[in-house]
Length: 221
Image (spheres, rainbow, N blue to C red):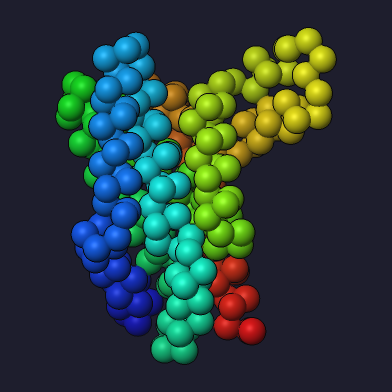
């Protein structure tokens, strides 16, 4: 019960973040951009996946990306809570915001249940991974992850490797797309592919565990 109370306390951050910081405006701008791109050929499934994944990265930047946000974690850990509860609560905060964006974008461009499910699971996987990265490195890493996911996240890794003289950077990007939570993996969720669903769930759990470890490190300082 104490774990659930701690998670709920972290979730209470969502409303003031959306209304009193730039997080709400940033998510709204992202949603409008995706709906606008739909008019110029962006397919609905890609729009839903990017709403979930990019919305989760924006959420992580708004919830734990600033120095003050990460410093406040030390204060939170002074109360009767655990790093896992704090990390889970922050992840759920990000997840709810990104899921709402995914649903809103899908309603605007035409409802597809499979696309919504894929977008929400992409938000879960990418959000947990982004949470760990942003906790460790800050908003600079959030920007890099956002650009990488927006530009290359939907590209299958074999297309990068097949390029002539791909170089170390492209090989690294291809490896990240193959092993990490990338959107090309999660397109198959819309058709009920169990492997894609398990991949998303595995990264969700791993990301939360990594994030809790980084939160716990702050209690040792």
